[in-house]
Image (cartoon, rainbow, N blue to C red; front, side, top):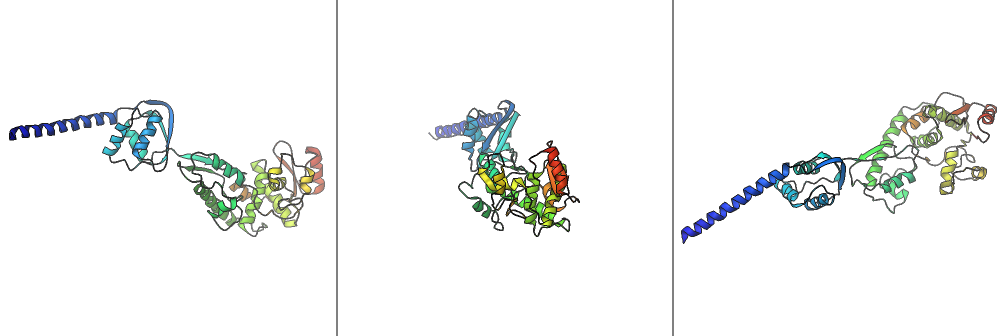
Length: 337
């Protein structure tokens, strides 16, 4: 009887050992066998909090894995079950299950990007953020002022406070975090440019310079003319002349602007109408580039007070009204600067 029990016990142990050997051999073979060759880039995203099981199921639904269980077993054997990294991933060429496991538990995720373009308004920035499906949207329902308060409490209006650039991020990054990065970068550039400003620019603070730079950004047709446009703005401010900048009027009109600026628009007074009010508007009207900020704080040395578009993207600059009127007659009858 005892010998029979011993035989059964050893048979059971041997059977279990054989199963383990077979399972181990299968898992090893599975881990090094290419899934398939991805001739084109295949992208997939893993959200925050993804478990090994949910990842395996997601990979099956995207036709990367044929079944989830081998991949789940592989992850547990290698102790990677709790190390899934959220992000956007890109696959191409041959890939083994083990390489795939290392990819999604390492730092080999693909970065997303979003571009804030110089001249954008804050409304346009928010729209672009809202349309990006890789971003976690935490600002829905918040006013512009409420969004700004989550980033900084120094300013009351967010316009112009964010640096135009390409921002890389991983999927699931919040819109507030991206705005915070853009805000901090603008503060860095503004501080650096302010420290290197010409001694005679008529700005009492970096914020005033930012307002003027936003006008320069919107008024510039050719990048090479930034310093000249800035000089006209600065010269007019020094003399107490109205800036008469169309972009400020358009900005103040908001959604009422239909693409055409008419004479009544120029005579209707509001805080952003630089035809009816002297000095700078109360806030920037867009995101200025670092080049526009530097040009504003280091304008060209010129007596020019006027400019008019020549129709090819460039402008003709004049120091006197008489010269400007002749340029208007030559280049465009409707010119106003």
